[in-house]
Image 1: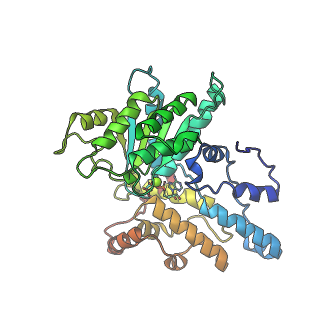
Image 2: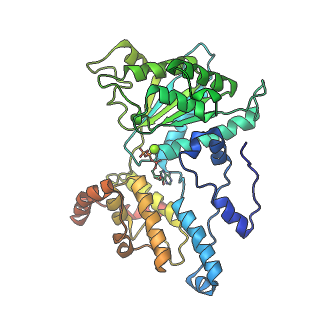
Image 3: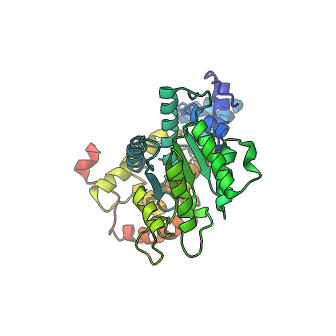
Length: 386
Ligand SMILES: Nc1ncnc2c1ncn2[C@@H]1O[C@H](COP(=O)(O)OP(=O)(O)OP(=O)(O)O)[C@@H](O)[C@H]1O
Ligand SMILES: [Mg+2]
């Protein structure tokens, strides 16, 4: 089982604590990986040093400091954005209200939004809190002596079929029977695991990778109906374009009772990008930049570096998508450290590449900002309050 001993915060141990937390999705595909994610200590921000301090560091100490800054900047967050906070509120409402007796089908959740808006990040942050709360309240073992696993997470990859999906649930639990069997047998074994381990939330990430029938989502819909009816869990489905695939639509030409029933039991939640066409939106954007600014470990950073000087620029380059914004900030910081520039500026960021979608959308926004049809600036009086 995973060793969850924590290291004391000596400088060397702090580095060691930074490394294993670099989890990838494959690690999260198994319960031990999930536990490491949940138990990973919060990263500590590298201590702020001035440029003078940096010059005084010996070569080894500087290399060590820069290594910690690399890891830190690559893992900023999760920041409590309004989108993340809003989603968490909804998730708590729904998951906590799903404690009806076993014979009642539980409400499912579908988080359906464009890529890079923070769906996975937000759901994992919620699931971590949920796991910790369940263990604190009910103990690490069930009344029957099984390990308690409040969360099961399955991430799908390209072209997954129903059988692979069921197998992935078994693999999460390290069930020996994940190699041979029919789709239905796999599902029954998964149900056994979930009952024994008192799973309460089943997260299915990147559901759009599931092989969807060309004509309608009935097979998929049936499977999730089965899980919602039989498994004592709240299903949290995450994906892109789920509504268009007919997961819970009632009104398209393929309407039938199955889809309608799934739709009735599934609450669709959204994640939105940042927008700057209202004062409230502009304030949110500014708050986000201020929050990032505080987290940067650059010796020449200064108040307002992002929130005042680069606000329009960062909006244009990210188009308000948190994924693109964080990529740009991360890469910019790596360059600022590597080149010794030690702060972020338009000059430096101009040299940093971002994802293709953000780069395409940027041109239009740039033009609108140049023509002063659009601004991210908060009205001055509110700026102080914000
Ligand atoms: N609240 C947050 N604080 C800091 N960074 C965040 C936050 N939310 C998202 N990010 C950053 O944005 C990136 C994209 O987020 P995430 O992978 O959660 O998006 P997604 O909506 O699941 O995208 P996809 O549909 O491609 O899976 C992450 O790598 C992370 O760095
Ligand atoms: Mg995702």
